[in-house]
Length: 98
Image 1 (cartoon, rainbow, N blue to C red):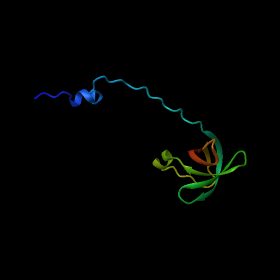
Image 2: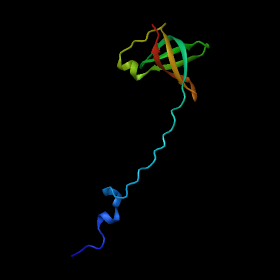
Image 3: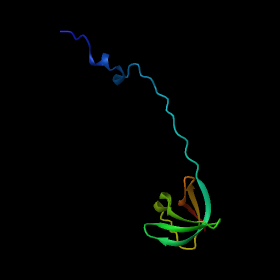
């Protein structure tokens, strides 16, 4: 007995037939603002109060790379903070100056 309609005929893309590569559109990475500052206070859960050079105080947490490499941040350390333009009250500490 012969089939009139096979599975491959109905779904050719599943078997690599008529494969068309779709164009992928990637979103651009959002711009971050970087500011130097000084850690003024240690807070729970690896967060810090940082006073920026422009006299603003923000809450910042350590970046994953710094946690992975076990870089300690103490009060009085000079750090580089990344902030998103959408929320200027929070940031991420990406570098501790020596």
